[in-house]
Image (cartoon, rainbow, N blue to C red; front, top):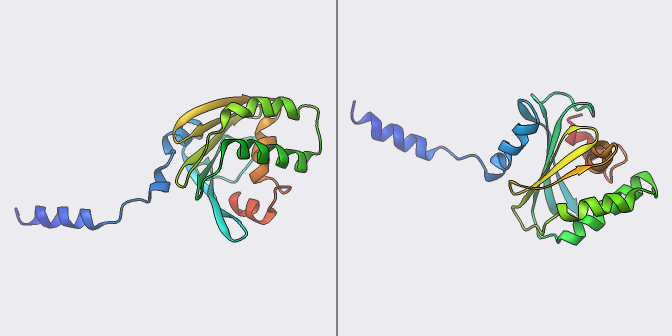
Length: 175
């Protein structure tokens, strides 16, 4: 019997560990999404180079529905500056919605939310209601974004059929 213990330990140590991205932010995701499970995953590329891996979490991996709590995790493959996040977000909102009077207000609310990101860093956007999105960077809460219909408007950048890549959005939604 004593010889079995070293063999068992050696076997356990030989098992592959979960990849780091698999655990990134799961405590944050689970705090907003009951029984959170991945619904869809995609890699966003720019001219063939990976920018980030995106994973959508829904309750128990259920079909995506704007009425349910969701979390979107983005794990970055390269360095992106804080101001580039804000510029890109506002450009996408304007591209999807057209110019709106409340865009400057949303930009002011978003400005403190973003951080400089390097390869391996992750942002999580979680939402339990239509008018609020909470952003986290590497497990640290950066802001509560509160604005009318902000869940669908902000997360629509990645999840709507009007996103930059409707095909990737469908895959992210698990369709």
